[in-house]
Image (tube, rainbow, N blue to C red):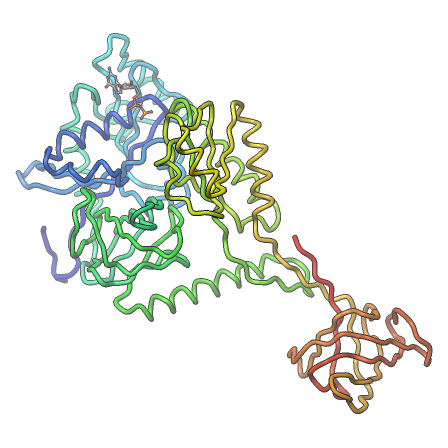
Length: 516
Ligand code: GDP
C-alpha cells in the first residue's frame, strides 16, 4: 500500500454501496462480484451472511487493490445511507435497468447520494436483455437531472449485465479510478472506529455485529463500544467467517459477545482498556440525557433516565416480497411512533427472517419469558415448533393481512415501551418555623409561595437549592383548623413524616408524578 510522509497515514480502500430501484439488479451485481472474485474454498464461512465483503481488483498500473462492498442492497442499505450520509460509504453505485429506465427509487437513491456528497457511478444494467434500451435510459436519467459523462454532465457510467458479467470488470476499474481521485486515507495506528452495519442474535454464540472499520485498527482483546453497548473482542472474524487477530480500515469484521444489541448505523469506537470503554459509555449516556432534558418542555419538569427497549421480531413469510413489505411497514411504525412524544425509547428489531413455515430452529434460541415476537405471515407452524413454543410460553402470532399486523404491532409497541415518569411541581412553600421532632414525625409552619400544598401529598425538602430528602404531609392546618389544601399566599401548619429534620428556611415542594 502506498505510504506518504507521515508513515501512519496511508491510502485506504473504498467502501462502496449499491443503490437503485427494486429489481434493477443490485443483488445480482453484488452476487456476481462476490462469486467471481472470491474463490470457492474461501467462501466456506460466507454462508453465515456477513453483510459486507472485500474483493481484490487489478488497477490500471497492474497493482491489486482492495474494494469493500456493503452487501445489504435495497431498503436497508438505503436507510443506513440516509441516516449516516457519506460516513459509511465512500462511493455509491446507482444501478438502473436499461429495460425499465428511471423509476421512483432510482430518483430517491439519487437524492440520497447527492445529499451525502459522495461520488457516484451509474451502472446501466440488463444490457443483455432484448428490451434493453440504453439510449432511452440515458435520456430518462438526463430528464431527472442525472447528467452522465458525454451526456451533458460528469457522472461516470458503465453499461453492464450483472447476470452475464458484461462490463462488471470496467465497473470495478472505474471504482479504483474514482478512489484515486478521492484520495481516501486512514491512520492505522489509531484504535478502530466506524459503523455498525448489522447486528443479530445467534442462539449459540450470542449477540454479534458486523462492523465496518472506517479508520484505525482493531486487535483481539480490545473493547468495542457502540453507543451504550459493549463487547470485549475475544472473537474477531473477517467477512469470510475466518477467525483473525486484527483488522484495519475499510474491512468489514464480525465481533461476537456484545452485552446488548447494537443499533445498525450506530458509530463504534474501540479502546485498549475496558475502563476507558466504560467511561465512554457513561459520557455517551450523560450527553444523551442532556439532549433529552433539553427537549423536555416546562421548567419544573424532571424526566427520569430511561433505556431504549428493543423488541426483537422473528419473521417468517410465504414469499420474500411479503418480507420486504412487512419490513417497510415496521419502518413506518418506527417513524410514526418516533414523531410522537416519549416514544423514542422503543424500537422493533427484526433479528431473523425467512421464507417458509415457522420451524423449531427459528424459535429454539428464544428463552422462556423473552420479549421476542414471532410473526408468521401466510405461513403455518411445524408441529415440533409449536410444542417448543407452548412449553416456553413464546408469543407466536399469525397474520394474513398486512394492515392487521401493523395495527397489532403498534399496540405491542405501546404496551411494551418503557414509560417515562415526569415529575411536575404543584406547589412550593417556605418553612418559617420548625418544631421538635418525635421519631420520624415533625410539626412545621410555613407559607405557600406558589401553587398549593395538599394533605397526604409527597414533598421534596430543598435546602440551598438542593433536594435533601422527601417527606409526606400527614396533617395540614390553616388558622388552627384541619384542611385538605392550602393555597398560594396562605400560612399553614403541618405534620410531616420525614427521615430528615426540616429547619426554618427550607423549601418544601409538592409534586405529582405522571407516566407517559
Ligand atoms: P434488486 O432488487 O435490485 O436486488 O434486483 P435483483 O438483483 O434481485 O434482480 C431482479 C431480477 O432481475 C432477477 O430476476 C435477476 O436475475 C434479474 N437481473 C438482474 N440483473 C440482470 C441482468 O443484467 N440481465 C438479466 N437478463 N437479468 C438480470
